Amino acid sequence: MTRPRKSLRGSCLALAAATALGVVAGCGDPEPTRAGRTADTTCDGQAPGPTTVTAWFHDGQGPERQVLEAQVRDFNASQREVRVKLLVLPETDYGALVQSAADSGDLPDLLDFDGPNLYSYAWSGKLRPLDSCLAPSVRSDLLPSIREQGSYGGRLWGLGTFDSGMGLYVRPSVMKQIGARVPTSAADAWTQAEFTDILGRLRAAGYEQPLDLKLPAVSDLKEFASYAFAPILWSAGGDLIDRTTYKTAQGVINGKASVGAMSILQGWVADGFVDPNPKDDAFTTGRTPISWVGHWDFPRSVKAFPGDVQIAPLPRFGAQTRTGMGSWQWGMPAGAADGDAVWRFVEYLLSSAEILRMSEANGAIPARQSVLKRTARFRPGGAERLYVDQLISGVAIPRPSTPAYPAITRAFAVAVDRIIEGQDVQRELDRAAARIDRDIAANRGYPEPR
Image (cartoon, rainbow, N blue to C red):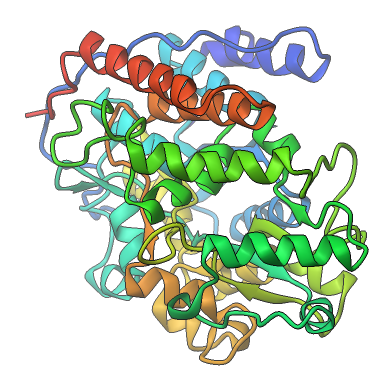
């Protein structure tokens, strides 16, 4: 909603400009303050008058951004009541920009944020609940994983127009050359020992470093480290935190199962199986026939090797394979904006046509079950069907639904980076556990808002 705001000249947009010039590294991340729980009156059902809604979006992959910009233009042209003004901010510092704006009271009317950050935002009072806005017919059509990742404390705080998929991109023609099978479902995933053997056979066949782990994305200490490698812990029987209480990470992130799984990952790097991938995409350029990545690389991967890309589940480190879920969501920051006006645009983005439009651009799993049925690549037998099967069968695990998650993911990302560098696995995971527990203690265990 248009209203006086310091952000036009204030700290957040000044930081955005400075970031673009390479002057500023980021903002601080002060501890949140627990907000009280109030009645959900975000949407009252009254039609909005002429209104301008401000929205922030992270500057992610090009096709995704281009579709959203087109959606804003089309929405604005389709009616006269609500006009959306979109600001695209650099993804590298997006979290810091949001925090800075929250501290100064300059958040927009509609905010795009990475799914697991929802719990911290909701707990600290930065968001308004959305239950009063969402129609029951749309709610029932959403994927259960979309509803799950958008909920905290029994309420709905965020909604994504798509969910994510994580797995291995494999060149079947290359696997055939070395006599290796390609798993087609989570039930027949490679064991970690079988996968390690395949890496060795690929090297013998001429692929010096056959596995692309997206190491640059790991070393930037952003969310990819947790999204990509927490499934290793889950598969082995470990986790990032004790989910029975959400009060400690000790004995879990640094327990025997987690240490063993991360030691295997470290071994792949130490044995030279992993492409350093410093400047380009090792998979699409043909250097590696296996890539450990998510749905966002599917369009360009199949473009590079038409008819020769198959998605396989991640290798299993224990009884079964695991994978991640969750992606970017839309939420309404706390404030005086007319919720019905803001929701008008969110509702447009959640329409079947617009969900399909976005999914075709970014390769992600559509948020609505009815749209899945209209999309050939997500139907049974489709090229990306494995992602859907993982989401609906319980193979996909949500990242911990706790306000401590920002501290959890930072600690784990640092540990992963150092483990890949060759540091002692147990020591680094012990340090991660200690960092997480210090954050939980500093916030009195993150009690739920009343």
